[in-house]
Length: 182
Image 1 (spheres, helix red, strand yellow):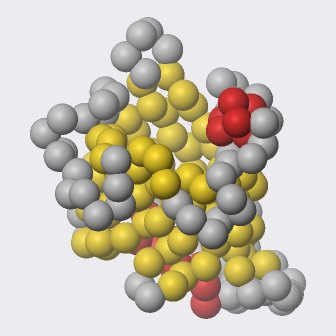
Image 2 (image 1 turned 180 degrees about the vertical axis):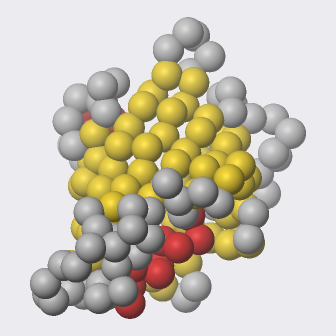
């Protein structure tokens, strides 16, 4: 890895890997709504969210070498699920590594991320589901349908190491609030 050089906060480092652009779609402030379907092929009904609207903020950090984010999802019972994540591109392995945690989570989420067919696909173990499933569930989170002021996120689970994906599918629709990278 090239030696870091200062980059203005919120901007990718010009000496960083080209893959820093993989999360460029998300840089800024977002609100999002979440809904569920019973299969990946079912169209989500955005008029029937299952939770109150949440917020998500993405920035380049550590002199522009990583992407950091923070989200806050109100749960509708006076509490919220809050989490921070760091996304760093592992140049030797050729994929992103993501680690995240928050005050309402029992440990750390750990994902590997690749850009595949115009989508950003995260596969790994979430501390939330690991604590309730005995660690047997693998999650696949796909960011897709990128537009300047919106994108979608789809979450699936697998109980067989990623061979099949089943159960409720979580769909999120993010809408831009601000481009501000500070």
